[in-house]
Image (cartoon, rainbow over all chains, first blue to last red; front, side):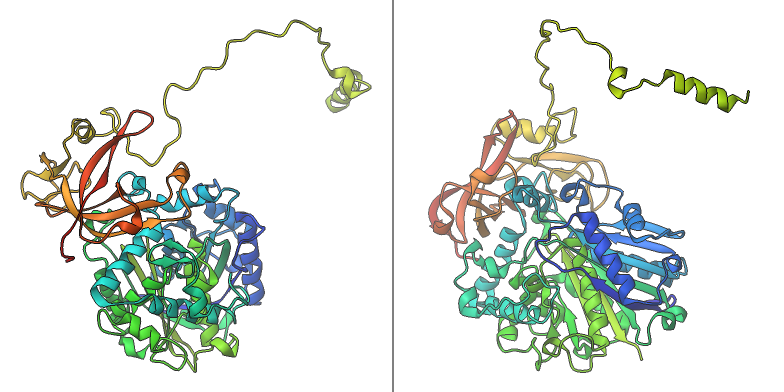
Length: 393
Length: 188
């Protein structure tokens, strides 16, 4: 249960995502400039706390101690809490969750949560090395485990146990890339992918093809979180954080159990929806962590949108699309926007705010949304992080 | 005269007219014959593989046994929980009383894939990198590892594999799974 002070998300912004001719620090600067532009009433001196979600700046940018660096770049002098949050692919949501906890507890009133990752390096082997140390490095990573082969095994088991098809995987990618076409900050903006085209792309880790995998992306995003009584200073239309849930139980792949039943996500969802006091069918849209197409399919099932094993049919039948039961990943998802690890969770929250305030193009606007859920998995889907937002009036 | 003015006057007096004048004069000599720099005696960059020596880890025995052909892990002496990777405390009852046990070296594939592009540093020449999860026969463990002995597109779920120790270039030892035969168990 959430028992603290109400916490509002009152605005946010992202940089353009993609293979960017910009350094880690420059991405942070862009996100900061866009945040201040998006919230005209925000003064740097208002901000008492800064949380920086960054997964691997030590490897991608050879830089530690990044929270004070980001504070300097944004012209902030936090005097309550300043810290980095790291949870691999969920580092951005961790920044928001930490800001939420601090404000809810009364330790902060005005906090910036910023997420960033610079993943495209002169040597992509260097970047792939960073991805391989997310797993249990000496015992799993040493075998050459990066994310694609792991999620490929999830897909293989899902196909074996439930008859899921490559065409159903492609349906996820087609939907999310179509939404990304209406998102000018997306890595794959103005790129169309038919299912037929997706099924002809090269294999990366069989059965997963290029179009089944989110990419290595540079980008940053930032949101402003404030205590409830300060919300109206910044916006007439705050988004309220109503629920939160998170689960972790294992790390080495030997302790994973079933690859296709993400029980940790079920537990996190029960906690998140329960603390918000709603059921899954009350959600209007969800930002689910589609690092791979198969992830989104398993997530439908773990969230309780459909029965176990039926996630492939769920997307193929259009039930997670505009006009369906719930809109999943209207932002364009990780597949369409790219996945700068630390920035993703923050960019998803920006989408929630924009959907609630009807400031996205009509092609991806969810009709009159009131409830939204944001989910990130991290590592080998061994951690699930979720937040539930309600539209304010 | 005030101290500041004195300092200024002295500074002016000492300043060379041109920057080059401040450089010391060097006489040409024979090139020095210094010994070549010594190579660092120890590995200075971390890599993927475990640190295996007894000065570095409390589970060095895993590696010495592996070198001798035995595949081991630790088990809780109290509640008999089998632990992987080898631990030094039991995460279930939190005792430090663990015992070494030998594991079966045969198993069958629960799932597998192959990385066809995007290898980490030092593994670029190893593409495609075939990996899988192996259910050990007779032990409640499903281990992840590299698969060798057959191309990825000829392997099937249920395939029998065996543990294969192998030497790393720097003298350390590690393990992988070798695809053993064409006999396939019914997928579970």
